[in-house]
Length: 93
Ligand SMILES: [Zn+2]
Image (cartoon, rainbow, N blue to C red; front, side):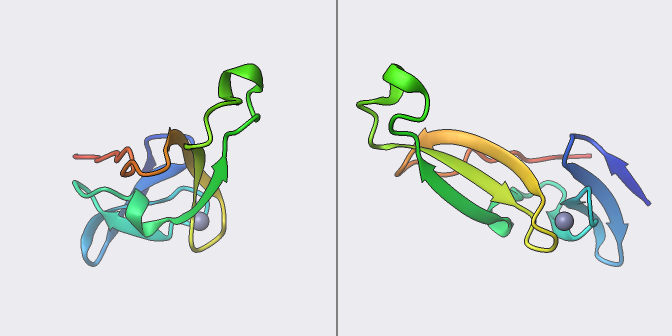
């Protein structure tokens, strides 16, 4: 059984308990209550120039894309300073 809680993630019941999973393929990423982004596939792209003038001097700003390691579905994105840790989402049920 699974329950969607965003456009890309769901909570699934597994033998190891409730897990955060990809909504498309239901591949578990991490137990609920733990940050899931460290277990996703991550691609970082420079924001320099991507958003017009506002980003022309922002060499250190990146767009992070988090993908499902099972099916490749895009799960989430965030913009951040390149040295910043992930903006972790923790889902408690
Ligand atoms: Zn998937």
